[in-house]
Image 1 (cartoon, rainbow, N blue to C red):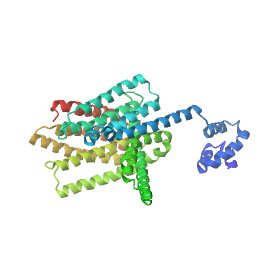
Image 2 (image 1 turned 90 degrees about the horizontal axis):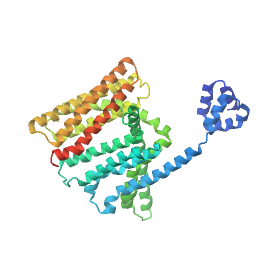
Image 3 (image 1 turned 60 degrees about the vertical axis):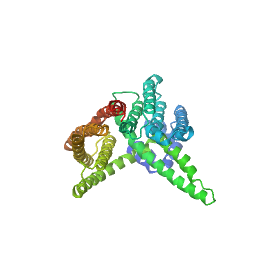
Image 4 (image 1 turned 180 degrees about the vertical axis):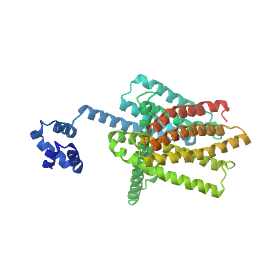
Length: 414
């Protein structure tokens, strides 16, 4: 290793290969050798790389970790509010489950970015006003507008978290793209945490049951519930603290999932055609069709955002383009079905909400498809497609706000 380090001072690529081959041995040998080579600029750079100490950074990390622990506990307490306050779970969770997660995430991003309090006031007011609004909506389980508000309010809270994530800059396209990528990474990390939590829970229940101590209900009601609520903010902290962990995993998942989803969608559409299923007259099937559309659209958004930093390769760009075109076909079928149902049976809150959402997704898909086609044809980066996605995000949020806040009033809370 000593000889490799000395030779690498004049050949940086060799030095990098030696380091990656055995980082521990490289660090040890380099530190022993440094006094002899300290006058070399390359050695000075590597010394800083290997031995850099940032006391202020460590203190900030400790403060962040302390905040994450407190935030995770608050999220857990929020998840148990129905039990603590004697509130009906059927009333609480549909209305307020998103308030357990997103305000805590927003606070974490504010602490991480050292966001000035003045910039957080509008966000805090919007979150608080949304919570009050959800609390005062009439308690009618049969209300379509109540269900729509419960579905669309999380998008507004998600946007609040993204606004703080990007440094409270409304017109920061790159910040939106970074937020989309962060959400993809967070989904991966959260899934890993939840899988580990399930394994721990099963093992704990099994071990205690062997000594006649049955804690199944305790683990389910407390440990599992609190862990589920705390998982997003914990995963956000782990991504920030160890970016290399997920940065290598998420692109691989995006690269693997894109062709798999494309194949699955083709097979599904062929099967639907053969089976004779009819989204025009089958309401439940139309609902599944729209959920499929939203899921595939989300995969396209995150895959494009994940690949926006550099050339994605023609194969991946072509797969994303094919997937976007196929999703346009799915969207057109769903859109024609909802138009047919409106023409036959008139407007309802649900039909209008689905119609508006489908029109927005179709418009966004067409714009993204044009950008992806250009990337395939010219072999260029797919950054333009990512920019078109980030530019369209405010339109989705405005529609979500309209459905959540205006529909109940317009349709008389029915």
